[in-house]
Length: 124
Image (cartoon, rainbow, N blue to C red; front, side, top):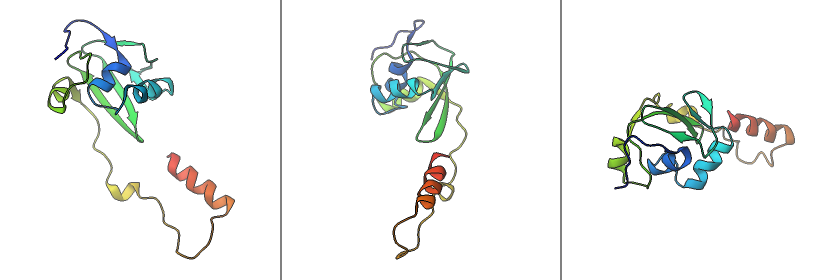
């Protein structure tokens, strides 16, 4: 296991190592898009994190709030990843709230207005 206590590591690498994102490129893209904050500030992928930092990551429309307990440079298994962070995230909303409205069968192709409403609904 590649851990270095007391040192720093890139935020995109740490997010990927503790399994908050599936790939490191997705972690870097989330940083570039402004979906990652360290101690309340937006960060670039090369920003470093250290033990005690609060990291907020928005993945799939849900914000994860974690505190760094241990620095990890390489991807580790789920049990070890759970030891590297303290999860302070609020509970996820029930699946019923995440449901996309269904169109009635046979109503035809959605109008431009209908498509805009669906896109607006999916963004929030």
